[in-house]
Length: 532
Image (cartoon, rainbow, N blue to C red):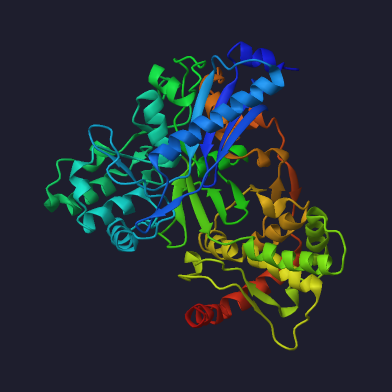
């Protein structure tokens, strides 16, 4: 079916997805076949205020309005029309963090983002109390750290939410959150699809002597599953989104979600026994589980899909930054020799040449730690290249070692899932910059995880497209299919991407590399201690 984008927008059948990323706010308009037909964006940066990373309330609204205005401009340029109405809207944002409000809807302290690591004491106490890994960036860690610090504002909290939850609340009046985003505030019980009642009770008991007028469930958003009613765009909300005044209220808005959930949707990885790996500046893997893990692990975060299935997440702070830095050295050399540089060609040549190197990188070893790496217990990072005189120091081995390093920490975390917990996965989808050179990053990751890796053309559409799909699922699902079936049948229609299976020689080589990598971690620790 050939759908005309102009008539889709004119008839109010287009669907809007907006995602607040850490450096860009992106708006995507999709048609009834879930294809992007227009987009807009706004670039922004977090600020370090009083030692904490934040975005101001003014920056949030200016960014939202500017990304929507950019979308309007794109629609005007392409189709010469205005957006008057929409079939549905979805709001997504980076997860976790801390946004507490009083009863007057005033924020009590500047928004504390997921990036802040001042919550170590709270996270350690709660992990022990809950017998569950509670990461530093989770909202409950931020809340309890504020209690421990005796911060004056805590007694006045009327509502605590995430960035996506805040924007959704302001445009609909509804204090709700999609289950995936909620699972980054406080652990979710997979049976009840709600916050863990046991952990809520333990937390309330922990702070009972503080004398607050609120209990935990009084201040948290209501948890909703994908496809559930999450409210409608209010007249005030329409003005906050579209300052030109063209957009009409009354549009259904789907449950607000976190960026991890929209990434799963955009890669068709919400079904149990599927997973996805995002690999760019940082990396993370999401594996959708059939059952809970046997015990908590400090390097594995437990979250959920937008429809409530448990997900094991391995989050790594470092991925391609050091690899890119080395490639820039070769760019400098080419320029020095007076040779014109095409960066796409340079990446492609070096990536593909790496595959001619030895499977164990000839003994070469690199640590790509631009910043600290919690999975391997490093509080800070020092990029490090390590070799002995007898190692095979060739360009192919050097590049292969850097590619291995970009997913090495990811392997260490996932080895727990596959080797200790015996988790089974049918399909893992890769997306992000590491996979831009066709077939190379895919083959390296397949070797690291000893699992087939797929890459889809649509994975590049990103989280704004993912939340638009969740908005479409709210209004365009007359057969009441599960989210997994809806994505399989309605969105991806059997397209599972291009798959690469692991080669036995690569797997053996990567395993040899990772054993040396783990054995030499004390060298990296010493580098952190010595070079300030």
